[in-house]
Length: 309
Length: 309
Image (cartoon, rainbow over all chains, first blue to last red; front, side, top):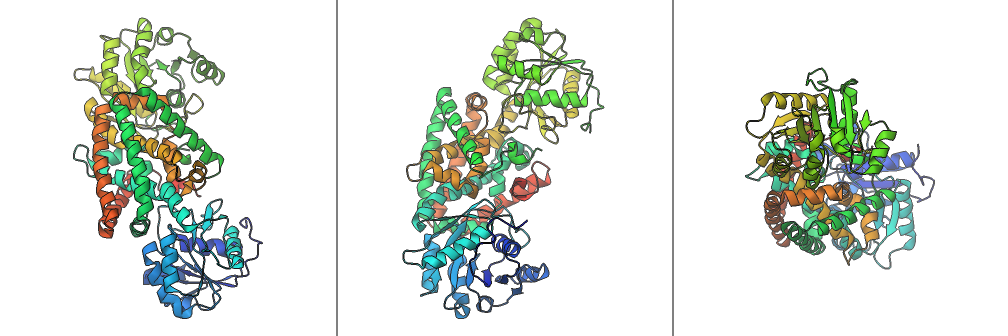
């Protein structure tokens, strides 16, 4: 079944993907499904990933050279960790078509916009961030439906060609995403709360539980169905990707973390003094947020994420 | 298909369930499936829940009086919030058979053991805790497979009849659970880490995100697929149940929280000074924990909990 919006015209005949991991390979699969005639070109800095991409025919042409990979492409999407954007952009510059749109999928946008702008002066740059993913990595982890119903945020700088923004928007819509345009700084603040802080907390608690002296790692794993296991999913996400995000979006992440620490102290004090009413009120409010997320189609309605079924 | 272990003999002819919410109603359904001839009796303090239980024929007899509900039962299981155990035990005392085994499903065990012991002097009390659940509540939320493959921890006090422990163990095995016997204090320490702390953190972060001034609640909900939505599931759990757990298991929860806050400060400092190596090492370690949990059968192997599929 074709994805929603696949008839919209973005006018791209050739799209190049730099980085063929979870997101890059999902874009390839979704684009192949939406536009069977689109020429897809690809590159990955890891020779094993390139070999695997050729083996599974992920794109039409896998190049061993990034500059070669982007030749003829009207749209180039960098699907590499945030900290690798500058080097990736440098490495493809020689092959970039003058009118190509350069985009990316990084989880923070202001630092990436700066890096791309410096590496590719004069290029049409439209940073983007599809809010989608799983805890898996690599070219085999991707799937065509990853972006279905998820938001993709574009953060074009002032003065960027509106037609180019519309074309990129049409492309993402064809992959199943819902597109939103936002200021890069706003994006980084919002995502610090909805994505970076939750990941930081998950990484922290999984680390804490696994090196406690009072409780063994074996017990933590064995009885993880009590709640802990939920955190281990996002704490299993790609270490390189997340290292880069926390460093690139440092200020917004630390600001959000400060709020969390304040609230943690509030709840800690309520527990310490046995204030059941304060706890009950807080927990009633959080229950309502879950309902809103399910109502908005941003999570499954099935209990336990449908796992127990 | 009968659940594993359904041929084991526990010798119970009549089982009474006090509290017919998610756990009570799941026990009823699983027991019905494993032992079609078992007589099931039930009570809930909420008249609407009793009416609904009768409507869906959850058990054979729904009584309006807890003392009446436990009459003739060789096993009585209290499936009420931890803070309601004492009152529930008091309320059924007059009807309790002299040789009945009294058990429960509360999430902390030492305080519950004390409460039951005081309310029912001389009774055979074997506290229990099935490590299973969903974010839903009420008699319609239960299902027969809830305990399949999950651990159920029994915490009998020293000197409790070993035969009674074996019978209760056989019963839980028949419901699909794997049974472990543990000291009540140890249970409360382990569960503070694997269940209570994760819930506290999830409640906190969902509350934090929903009342930030910098980012709107609408944005938090809209872009929740970046990680936040995972936390909202357990933060949608029953407010009364969790209020009681944090107050009853205060010491162990605050101790685990102290460790978490130390680790959060460590990671915060690493982000602040841009120490990518420290972050990368930490995140690599947490990824391994996820693999162990999946390997041990305590979570699904499918990426994204199977949600995206």
